[in-house]
Image 1 (cartoon, rainbow, N blue to C red):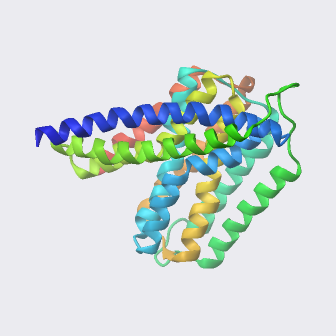
Image 2: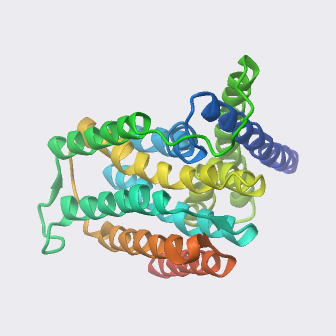
Length: 316
């Protein structure tokens, strides 16, 4: 038993290396690809990078929808989005303040706020939760259609690259993008599985593992990518990755889950969806303040998530 735990610890360490090295390659190659396509770091962060790093959430949610585990299907999306804005965006800002801009606020941030509010009203209406509330296939189609329209808009009205003479993408750039993406997704998966084994060996309950290691592990690609991008000064990729991931989760993942398996809405998720609306609004306010997400503001976002975790544990 002790030998298997040693192996688990080694794999956890290796998965962390995979996450950071994969994120390093992903950010550099994504910036080169964005410049070759004559689009900004922000747009490539909102789309290609965001969708790629959301692969773990996509896999978990769609699998849960197919097997009719509806609470997991919806809860994973909402929980991941709160985690993205709280721990990941907040934690990244604590490590390195993130520069923001007007377009990030008015176009992408406001669209995320409108989308999150739309989810709230689709789930609960104007009168809060009532027995029998449901998430229908038509609502799933609406969300998925909004994602397609948003991505199409970004590429039709594309922003120019930030640099005057940027490095152009080569065949090697596309190869490193794919390798980096595979490494961070695989690294996140390995970290969840083997860190959970270590936690169980130490006597940690499955519930605590679920809301800590699993939540953090499925969001590890976003965290590694955003921190790497912020440290390299690629602020558009750093924050675009998180806004784009949240939009992809809400419109793409949740929309597809609703199309696959329409479901009844549980009262238990009301507070989480409401908190997500508040978190998005607060993040928008921070993006607008001095066009910079500071360390102090990052600390506030992380603290809110820690408080939420405390009440989750207390409630359990």
